[in-house]
Amino acid sequence: MPVQTSYDEAMQIAMPGMRSDSTLENTDGCCAAQSAIKPGYAVATVSVANDKSVVKQVSAATDTIIKGIARFSQFGCVTGQYETGDAVNVMTFGRIWAVTNLTAAPTPASNVQVLNGGNDAGKVASTGGTAVLGWSFTGRFTTFTDSTGTTVNLAEVQLRDQTAVAATPAA
Image (tube, rainbow, N blue to C red; front, side):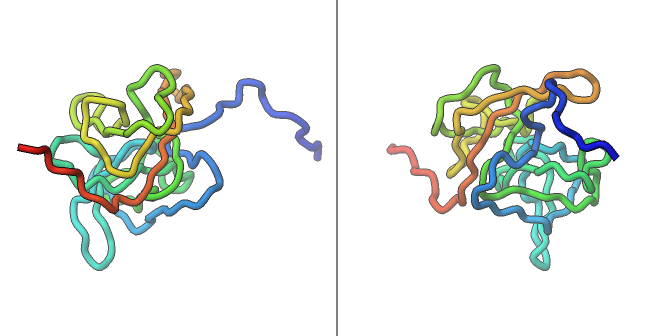
């Protein structure tokens, strides 16, 4: 059997929901999809029972309990997304490639917002969405071409535990 000595020059750097480095990370695998969830998109907690979370892709301003970003899984994403009832892997701490509406590299250490409406719902952005405490852009950016030939923009996001509450604006 021949040994592979090189890789295709067109090999993509990253894909949506792919872990971006090997540093400390936490992935919650005890989540169930309420509806279809695409890897690389932000997910919100719908309910929790028996230490199991029911999650959905962020799609509305009322999705305020943002849990993390859906990771890609070769087992769970055989159709390209998690389907209703599937076990979903959600990264809650670490670095991950997230789908974004940005078209260029974000400013390193800048705050991440999650878009909650329209065709961009669940994507990460610099403005126009819900700010997520503890999440920041690393400054890395790339694109991914999916199986339909569509180019998907990806930004690397550092997820940290949300241990603080946003300050209330002064009256």
